[in-house]
Image (cartoon, rainbow, N blue to C red; front, side, top):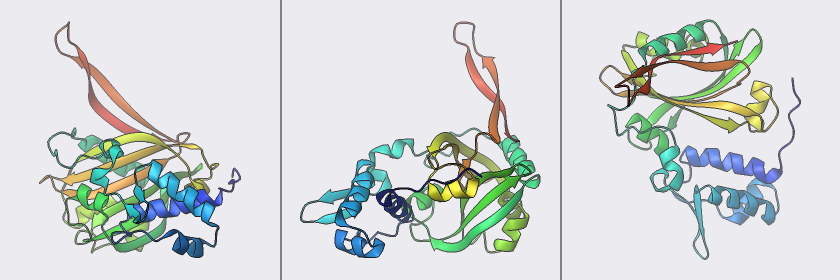
Length: 269
């Protein structure tokens, strides 16, 4: 395994606070600098560097005399690139074949469950799943392995009512899509966005890569046949062990031909 490099203390604090912001923990306001200094046992300059990083990404607002407050995802400048537009159910391509392929991939790999718990849906999760912020969702964090080693670090959120029939044991044994089907959900389509992200210390350790390594980042929102969201997923994949393939066909008149996706598959090695 490639040794994991230590991260600066301010960056570790930034990563912890960013995760807590995404989970909606600071709905009533952010802790002050003094409270954060005591919580993390660091100097004020370290806390300020972490907060400045969050502010530069549009996650928080710092105002003299008023302290620090989180910025709602809908008000962030970067929200347009977040990856899921749940307000347009008719827009995403139907990916039934891809879903079947993903289940097949899952069955040919093994998984280690790191965390399973019912949590309150943060605003981004609630918006994606079209539920009320604070509603219960099952959050599961898993690492999937091939024979070569760790493949992906996956975080999923499923409405609590749909996940009532499965927990850690079932998640270690079967793909969530199969568990949802067994619970009576009829999976229909998915909206998926693929981008890139650098590995932080926690993910780097789980995937056996160096901190700062480039990872394939996937956000996937799965709908049932009634077009209701049933699963929201954030996945980080090692690009040396995972690839995403698409078959493209040209359509249209000779002066206006465009490439259209006809088929997609996820491959691992």
